[in-house]
Length: 150
Image (cartoon, rainbow, N blue to C red; front, side):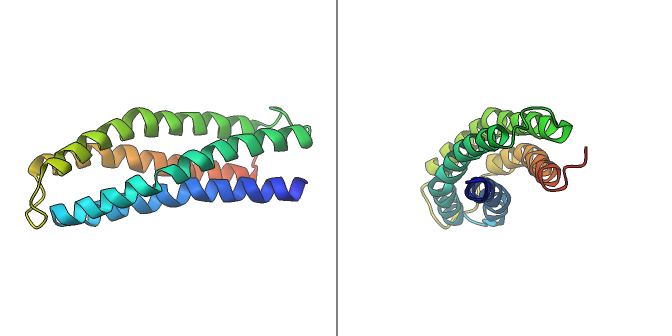
């Protein structure tokens, strides 16, 4: 049972980490409105993966804590949980609302071959540092979960 939970926990983390690292790169590589429509279409379709993965990650994590009788006795685990909460706030509170605004601007651009609106570039520049911080938090959480330093 422990092995199965651990595998599910790891797969759930991959379903979160994968899109979080790949989707910003896909979005930033778009050079036309048509490419942006495509990139945001992929983003929208893949957005369910981190949500389901997040729920599975929490459930399997709690279950693993119960089975191993670890609870909240380990500092690395407590820090991982706090960093995870901060990451969720960053993604759901800062990144997603801004992405919705960008998607609205792109959807209003009807010509698929024209240049990307300047307003898009400004909005993306505001999101990049937040996305980078969220990605760094993911790396820190992953390192804490694997290395368990303290």
